[in-house]
Amino acid sequence: MTDIIDTKTNDEGTKRYALTLDTYPTMPDGDYFGDIYGMDRGHLVHQSDGYKPADFDYRDLNRAWSHFGDWDLVARYARMFFDVAAVHTVDTLHATTLIEVVSTAAATEWGNANANLTEWEAWAEGDVYMIVPEVLVTWTSDHGATVQTWEQDPEEFVLGGLYGSKWADETLAEMTF
Image (tube, rainbow, N blue to C red):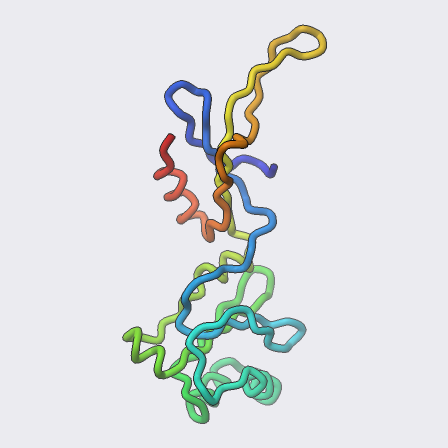
């Protein structure tokens, strides 16, 4: 297990929840306004389905990026020639650019075309956490010494995929024994 960031312990001191980094997080899963893409060696890679414009093909976006090399121009191109209301981009700490393409239909249905890339940005930056339930175990060493250690509770599930430290902290605070 990775280093413990924070804990919440029961009144008896026999159980706790340990907040740690999720070292193998899955990609975010959920409803997004648009399709999510990432950049890999200068080309778009499809990450997640959203409300995609009917006549839109990500290869058109790849061609526009190759031609213009500027996301503002690519967004303008997509709005002019496809049913696209917005193209949102976020640059992460690891030089990964995340792109969300929002269709006009989705923007109309949801009332806006604001980016919903918070979870994806956290995932790309390694800002994903898990809460590990642990129990205090007492045992006797080979030398007769009594030792206490925290070990993962096999009767409870690990809660992973908490994208962003704020959500992780709030979730830990809400955990009950």
